[in-house]
Image 1 (cartoon, rainbow, N blue to C red):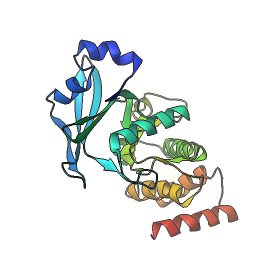
Image 2 (image 1 turned 90 degrees about the horizontal axis):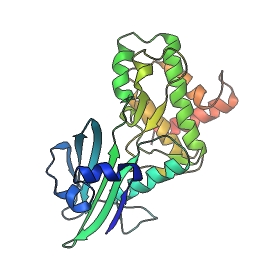
Image 3 (image 1 turned 60 degrees about the horizontal axis):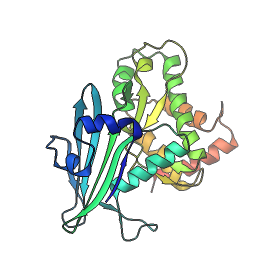
Image 4 (image 1 turned 90 degrees about the vertical axis):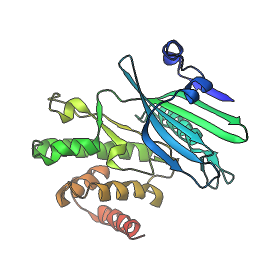
Length: 258
């Protein structure tokens, strides 16, 4: 048995009788995301949402649900991998979700794991922010501020030699006050969620370019051609197309074709 409880949450979870693996595993909760079934026997992973005294928590429960890689050829639980990735991003000071609880145990020959994270109060997924974007209530200048912030956010992560590796718009959370026009000055704050596929990778490696490719493809319905160009220029910290940018664009296009 291995367990972690964030110091700031220990008293609260104890008051809710949710401060141990057994208590969390046995609590009957509706699925927020229905279980996915893995390759392993009896392998599954699902997410529950808890609303307790005004606090929102997300609990990912897994059984025999593994991730395989050269580093872990025999497999590692996905929850354990996500827990490690959140710790890595925190160490590197890359804003992301926060771990409230992590636990792993062997029970009757089955490996069970859980990770609980705090809901990001005051943030909404970029996927939801696009509804305001598409309504036309975002001025061009405000769109550019948001695009540049996402580009800078992603570049900062890549410069620290990490990648998200599943960069859908729903995995980037944006400060809600900016999106809803309650914040009139400054730039929005971004944070990553769903860290289970994140990994370390060299800056501008082909693997990191996949973050850019995934995000561009998933935003193609509401980012115009000029939006995408501005995003890539911002990522490269450039104001105009030059030879270096064209070379970078060719590499990105080669990734898109694979």
